[in-house]
Length: 98
Image (tube, rainbow, N blue to C red; front, side):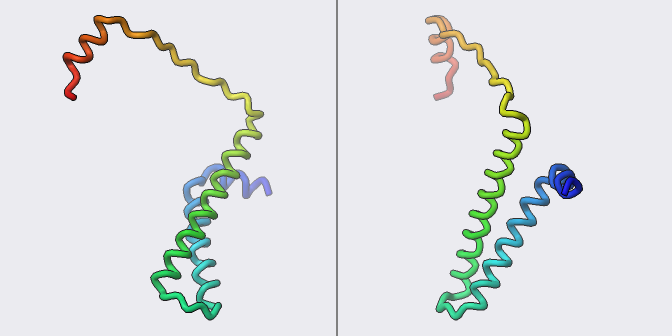
């Protein structure tokens, strides 16, 4: 099991792409075996939608796994923002192309 996890962590994009392709294949196979009156173009559209749903579920699961694996204690970046003064606003208005 650890070997699979290490391979997946090294090849994330290939894993997601493989799951997407297998989702399309499985959906097309399921539609071709059933006696549905759908045209081939609609079967392909439905297969793509099923594969996208599978991909979103896998990506959400991977994000949750990564979050809980790290303990959820990633530091939140602090953005220092200062309110612009009048001179900066005037300069921005003069230099803005819009």
